[in-house]
Image 1 (cartoon, rainbow, N blue to C red):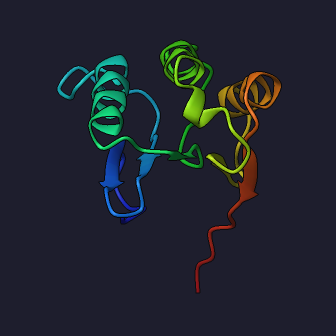
Image 2 (cartoon, rainbow, N blue to C red; image 1 turned 90 degrees about the horizontal axis):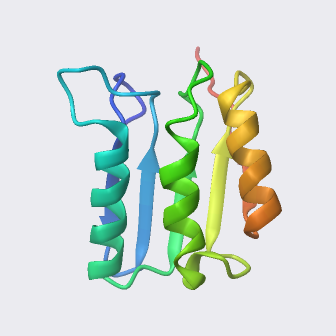
Length: 122
């Protein structure tokens, strides 16, 4: 999945039972609201019985809490994402504010593996 573009999106690999969701901040009025995207992502994850969730927070900036609540609620109500090795949270060198709050709460209530992914440019 490309990291270019300012849109939040998700993809599912049914063969690996893995969901990848990339947040690029909150969607503007012309796009699907972030809570609707998260709901749709969890519905799709449930449909394929996904056991692994990768949450990419590198492109999130700002301090709006509308990301935290539906994401945490979705994870906390699915025991399979609370197991060791089933939740990955990707952060980057520019992660701050909302990302730190989200990562802290996920670390407190779930058992994520945190991955810091640097963005290189040549």
